[in-house]
Amino acid sequence: MHSEPTDPDIDLRVPARRREPGRRQWPVIAAVAVGGAVGACARYGAALLWPTATGAFPWTTFWVNVIGCGVIGVFMVIITDVWAAHRLVRPFFGTGVLGGFTTFSTYAVDIQRLVGGGHARTGLLYLAATLLAALTAVWATANLTRRVIEWRQS
Image (cartoon, rainbow, N blue to C red; front, side, top):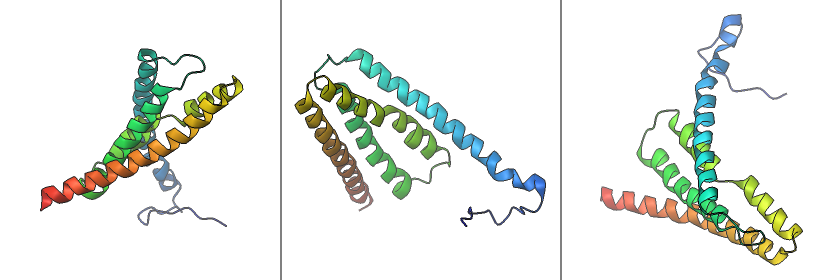
């Protein structure tokens, strides 16, 4: 049987106290939702500004994902190594804004459309290039951010 982690300050034998953990999650859920809406609107705006022709390499989605992953690398180092952020910063910006801005679903649909439309090479190139570039962006920006922080502290 799996047991959920509990707050030692909450006596779950008292009915009114059983609802407290759920109530504390609503601000987090709201932060993720608002951040996600902001990020998704930014991604949609990028797609409107730089549309992709049918069968072409989806550069806009590619760069949105790479840039978003780079920002994730910087952000995670800053909020874990440098700044004691408010508890809603990570859900709002990390999960919400950046989660809404970067897009696995559009990436997957783009690949499906390319392959299904007879552009398998482009679809496979896009699949591999996005994965490699996004992972490299997270790794590079996280390491660069750590180096800058170490340099400034020395």
